[in-house]
Image (cartoon, rainbow, N blue to C red):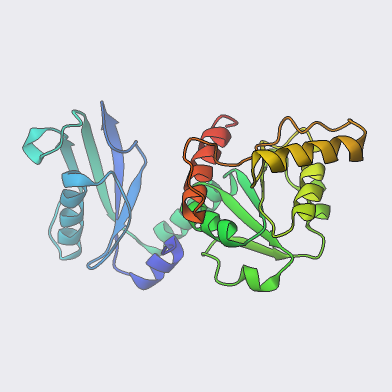
Length: 264
């Protein structure tokens, strides 16, 4: 996926299209924007005929024509049935505008919920790909350096010998996903995570049998001082019985979106 910085660098002649007003039912909210160059675009203002019209007008502006604003009713006349009304503003992306966009994007990203993946095996890799375009700040922690190669842009990678030692330093409100290649390591990480009461989510890949085994082990190791009840295991729920990594990743991504949105 192309980043904002990469798009701006590759497309110096660009128009910023912003939803300056949204009334009634509209596909995107006020403030949503996209960038349009002569041959590419970045972001979306909602798709459909509305977006096609915006792109055509932006490219007309690049060519010296077009309008600085458009007021578009989202009805049958343009083949959309939202029923609302959207006002669009168009402006050239100057170096100052580009810097402001990047600053705003950085501030937005800094406020994203933090998701920490312990393990980058088959499911971990699929989950990283599923999470990378979503509004999360994702870190992958691994004991195997080779598993951290070729991660998507924007994903932080950490190669460490003792992942469980990092849990106590995670930011409050983080989501922890435990998917290592070693059940014993999974258990150590989970014990450290469950010892905290300020994490938004603690999940582990596995089965009902693995949960029972972990629960017994945790009770024995901690003399009952740490409960396994907050642990999500299996991650992704049980509604879909499909163990392919990509399916598990999709289910977990939905679970995280639902869980972490409640903490905002």
